[in-house]
Image (cartoon, rainbow over all chains, first blue to last red; front, top):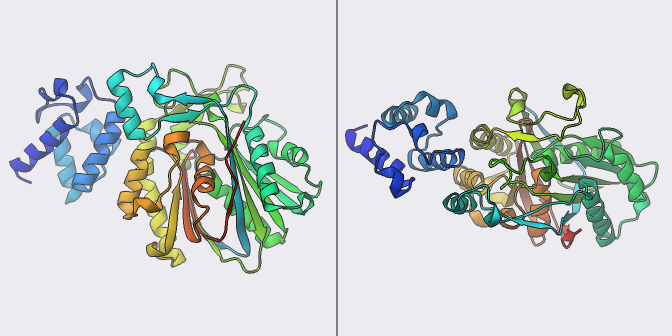
Length: 80
Length: 333
């Protein structure tokens, strides 16, 4: 997938957080370090990623991804 | 696979009973304002029913059963089977079903069973009742399922408090040579038994006396729900030969709206065919399927798919045909 798609992914993630939080989100962000990160937020994100990419991202995928870029690569790998 | 069919059993009616006492998620002080709004929108739950200390699941099932027997004009002496499904029984022993036989004034010739099952318990219980009625040719049976699961919840637990609610239900089943087969598909994923668990109060905890509390690994249960339920439904359709377009209604365990949305999306189901009771009654554990059915299937005739999933972990789905199902008016105690 191209850089453009990675940017789309980051923008999708940003849209799921408040304005207070999403200004600091980039490809290097670890979602688990965000103040608004919670199990509810995690569930909402899994649902949204499934809608957009038709991929179910697991707890292990989140735990193993240290940055948004890594999480995006997991999704790309699952789609291929 | 645990796919099987049962024959000659018809579902005749369903009744439900909930506590009068209401709790509103908008009042929950354990959440910040912004968190609370998102929570209500995501879970789809506004109001929950909470049983007071004096009311057990068996009490609500008793009220529902009396109402249903009266509405069906059944003679109590014809009821030869009673199954009580619950994870909040009256006592560790004896089983609650034997007391219910007595309290309902049923005959000593009535066979009674207790079944310890949760969110998938309705379909588990239905499979058990249908198999017994079908093979024994006992005439009439009652499947009672209910829980006061809120008594097992810590008031500070953000993952369980906004979800759970109490209810008791009764379903009437009858041996009927003309009834269409019921198709079941049931899976047990016991390796994940700790995902939803109450550790205290039983033998592993040496019957300790501190209040037993339910612990739920919310994300694990969510992942299980969105990844393990759909394959069971697919398999049920595949092996039964029933087509999606033949289904008039899908009654899912009322876990939360996010999970229901995922199931509808994956199965490409028209939301009009998926009744819910989440908004006003929350997640009532094993009672959620019959509660939802009793409030929404009155005018439905034809094939319906029921699917429960959760504690165990387990998934249980079935397809049955209903016709002029008696759905009693909701009782409150």
